Image (tube, rainbow, N blue to C red; front, side, top):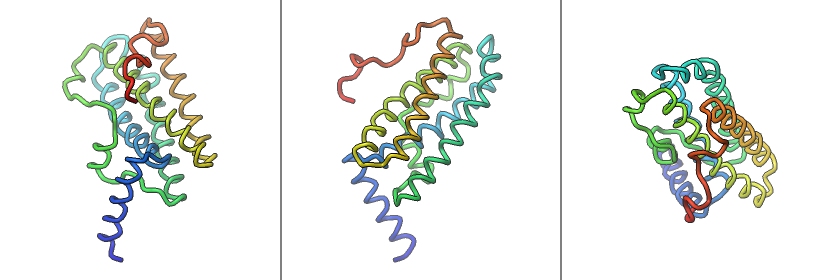
Length: 181
């Protein structure tokens, strides 16, 4: 089988997996979200002003570093188990559920930081679902890796929300927001 044929087969299987969904497919969304979020953190570090700039100077690089480490770990874990991962820009754009807006770099620093917090919160929805799917599939190492990511993200949300002077769940997703998820 040629490389082109193999890739077409991978895309076909990926489409099936995303409509089922599977633990691997849901983790593909998480991988895409991590990459896009890392880029957004980098942008906010460059453009945020005010007190949020100091917060991002202190924590932004740690966030990017941690997300990139988990990104690599999840990619390796999926590939080692015969799963597909997003590998092209088009796939990352298709699989991410984080919104991008180039104009947001000119928003007030606190708004940029809160946007990153909301992105963390969005990621928790996918991570929680992927953990449940990994447990159903008897895939303990994926469930464990995702559980650690979930705990870390919740810690970052709490840290940033306190900095912004918000209650923990202020402005974040609630079950009433979307009954379709």
